Image (cartoon, rainbow, N blue to C red; front, side, top):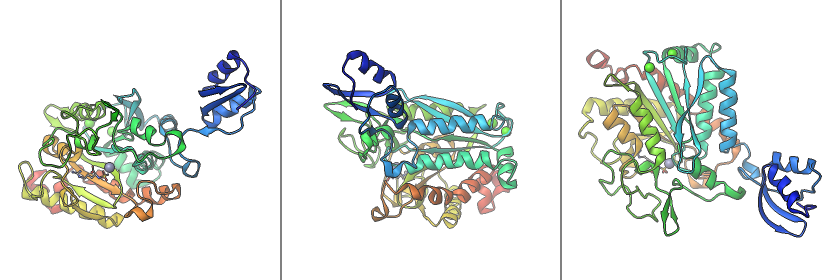
Length: 379
Ligand code: 0X9
Ligand code: CA
Ligand code: CA
Ligand code: ZN
């Protein structure tokens, strides 16, 4: 933009919210949102080309962090009796990590099975944030209109964590281009950043060659379990749902991309049963997983059949909290179909594709063993 000769001019531009990148005579190079650029034009400066923040223009249908927060705030305001926007706390760089609760009598902690959906442990897996926003809208916009959804909202307490890695997500779209970033943004020294949040959980942490101790690695687990503020935040929330010795959260989906898979524990071992996972529990996981996969057309398998992962969230949720926890790897199936960056036109069909599985998880949360006919024995 140009027409800014003085420091006072530049201060007005900064006052409009733009970041000033450099100054040449009357020309100021800025990074600004579309709204900020408009404000600067209204101040009487000439804006030539703006390096827009947020997603690349072709993918504007995706929500960046600010847009996600705005959508959550707006939806919570529109549905005050069934939805609350709370906070898990802050990410490493200080971004608020929103926590959504959806239920009837939402202000009260009722004795209802609780469900958790979390998304975006991995920065470049942006479709998962859209999945979380889809679920927020599914449960709120259809409440009182759709009998099945109304029943679920009335009989369950639904927790949604739409953004486990806001720092990595914003870094991945910085400057309007993609950076293929996976990890969080904790500085590690020597110019290295980030650890893999889905290797930083505290069950069998680093046990089994399913993660790396090298800071340069894409699957760097960190020096110790829960070293990332982001995993600490979700861990502390989940532990806070243990009331009178009983974990209230019964079932969970951790959303990732891509490969079109439904995965269940354990990830750290190829054994189908292991300490804390007996044959009935394994059968229950497999039966639920296959049911989900029938509904969305994904492939269902134990998570280690993909490759060994140690320190993943679902192993921790199951082994330490008894939560029936699944990882969903969303669209697409292949790198040719867009890999981590499928076009925004896929958001609507590919989030709706997981509607049935998401509802089934909520419905089975009262007694997962029902899926193998063993509710009399266990529930
Ligand atoms: O490696 C991962 O963390 C997940 N795949 S991704 O391409 N989204 O990075 C798979 C995790 C599956 N394994 C377990 N949850 N144990
Ligand atoms: Ca309720
Ligand atoms: Ca409760
Ligand atoms: Zn992932």
